[in-house]
Image 1: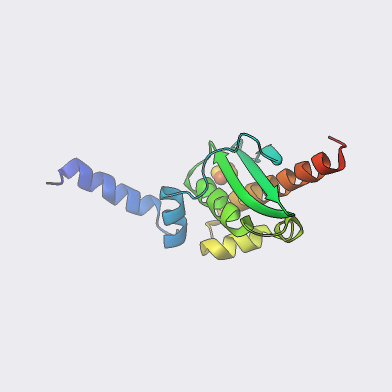
Image 2: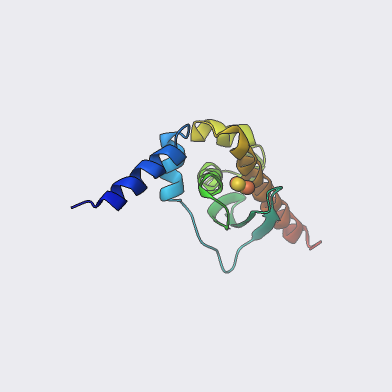
Length: 142
Ligand code: FES
């Protein structure tokens, strides 16, 4: 049986998530590719303008992103952005993954409230930096 407190919590959660797409809610609740890769080929750790941090690890095989994981200490929309950017990049050639833009992430998420748009930028910037790190390691100029 649901208590009054549980009902109240549900109502509050609905209000908080108003204006947020189902896709964002789903990815925030069940983020894909969360975690790290111990022997990653590329890695980046960035902090956004709000102070939230994101880390991305990539494993590359035959110039394709075979594995990609992320971690963040940010809020739900940051989690959803990290989840979506890793889904978009997985399986792509590194060059293709570098073409992913914040707009691609926003489109795939069904949009984000204006105050959360920077979460998509943080996710994409972290992805790009992880790919650059991979390239640096490849060229031996680490
Ligand atoms: Fe700052 Fe999402 S709230 S990255």
